Length: 83
Image (spheres, rainbow, N blue to C red):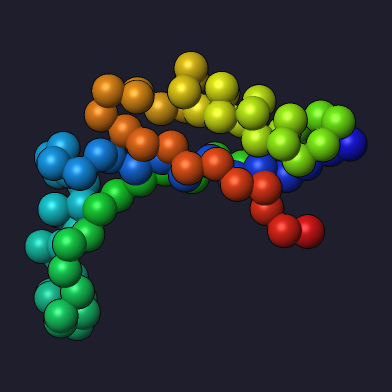
């Protein structure tokens, strides 16, 4: 069976996020007052062929840890997307 999986990669707390900081500084000029603590990240959508959802998540976690993220500075959250 094919499972649509989403992998969200974000910087770990305490790691500097220059992209998020740049966005946060630009917000007031664009009329977005009161928005704070902006953090940038990446989202990957993949399709995983597996026998069940648990197997699909295991494959996606391995993919996230080995290729899609840097586990030293980033966290990866994996979920099966609702159809």
